[in-house]
Image (cartoon, rainbow, N blue to C red; front, top):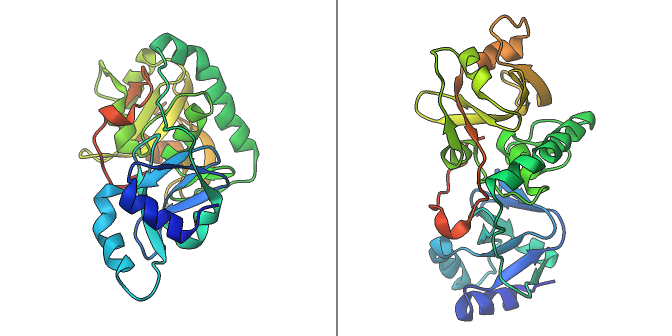
Length: 266
């Protein structure tokens, strides 16, 4: 358990101090704590967020205590705000987070585990949750991140970040189904606009993919769809028109090597 006073001292004197999450923790996209940005499960590391120290310093000078604190998760560099009362689920880390080194071959050997994770998640009662990374409710990229993290493989948090992180797979044709022969089990499939990926799914084989989709055009939860154009399923049809491409996971995310970003999409 961390007190606000201890947190304030560490932010001022030891800004690189890391804290270990002891229970499920919500991170929000602003100090108003209204919109979920992401979630952290037990064992994850976080630290105070240097990019957001100005609002915090301003609040600390006020006569009342701050209600939210800016942080950044260490495994994926993802920033957010936590409620002050949630400091009780943090403890000071004994050692700083070190990103695992995982080869492309090791990743391929663990793909089965990631797929099993998503399929097990699908068997539970679930719904699409923007910002969700913790069972039973996920958003699309949160499901991908959680599935691979469970195998010791870290991905960036959001769909567009995951697209940039993966090794692009060339589409030899001009239609989504032309991608199918190029894909292997465990590749990520990206959807969205011509400008940016806003959705991601995990390829199961033969053009089938598993993903968590929302209410607007999806299943409000986890389901399986296909890249095949002759599918009569309305969800598959909707996502077919938004396929951007696919990528292969060949390495584990390393915070030191990645650019910082704050935008959440998928």
